[in-house]
Image 1 (cartoon, rainbow, N blue to C red):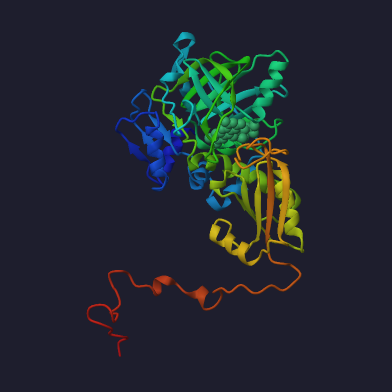
Image 2 (image 1 turned 135 degrees about the horizontal axis):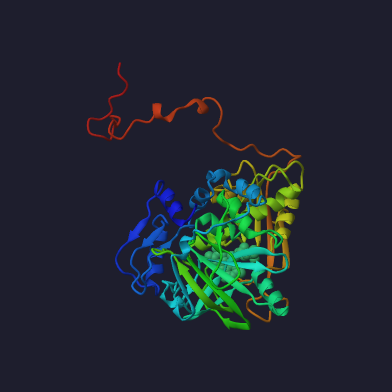
Length: 473
Ligand SMILES: Cc1cc2nc3c(=O)[nH]c(=O)nc-3n(C[C@H](O)[C@H](O)[C@H](O)COP(=O)(O)O)c2cc1C
């Protein structure tokens, strides 16, 4: 069965995990270490000893595209295409009676979520936030299971806020309006393909646990919960079960969000009715202002959503990429245009297909969109601001963009944005200056190993001791 541990074993075959064995506090110290390591290779970090808790913590599991591709079992350059294909094919979960996450079961008065090593991350975060916790809910409208990661702030030993703006918000509102109880299972620490599946931009008519099976490459093992009627991912490290308190919400910020700005909002209050975990459980954390947050929500889910939307109209769309620093608000699109103006249509589809997207740059397929320098080169040499720019003001978007506005500018931050499309492709029907490059003969035949000498056999060059010797006579 695939779980967090099986992934970490596989990961250690390809990259080291950084171990921290000294005691660290979950109150900003642990996230500070993760932040300092971000610029030093952005590794997975294992904290063996958290001062305030018995549980160790793992951070950074979804911190790079390479790690997510490994989790999906795809080579990095195929991972997005594979994802777009796999996400549409459901693999049904299997019920198991062997659930490691049930090693320890605490219900009723024994529940104390404060004992978990839930960190305070950014300087001004308003509390301890669960950030890598996948909420699992039953969608009463269709009987499907819906999953997603939501920021969850600890209120007291058995209450937390669930800050959902997605499908779960609608599901909760609909259930409570119909006088139904709304329950939630929260899974902390599973195989990263499970966390990735929770990010899939699929409609409510698609069962999220089937998406999980498709991405794991095996059916997700599920078990019954102790106190609610929602399936439990059996191979998780930790599970919380609970019931939303009808009509009760609480402020849940400030919270450092994925675009690296604080946001304050509200969350639905969940009463936690059970905590179960493995006997040697590892708590999973995502540093909310770290690249890991942006990476997991962007790749492959949001990029895949854009690629699929574009291919539905332009099947020859080669690839898309959202630079991680932009929190999925900015995209590069690679196409092979067949006629003039097609790139602009691609831009219109891209901007229209995705409420979060703010800027899209479309380039020809000779531009490597995984390299910002190449995209900038195309923008500089194939784009003119007065003819190749599409500007669409007053488009609804996300309050996550702190420069968004309202129609009457009454508030500093609204939910309207100006979408911008950059057509940096060459004309199709007109000649365009040829790109200067070094390709073909004799370059293709050169094997650098036959040319470049190793450091321990340097040439006798004029500036080196002994001077220039030259070729043997
Ligand atoms: C680390 C992390 C934190 C997230 N926090 C939230 C959140 O607080 N609220 C929210 O609505 N979405 C959040 N998301 C995004 C949702 O999990 C994602 O959009 C998911 O697809 C929502 O499920 P849905 O598509 O069924 O609505 C977060 C994603 C990640 C990776």
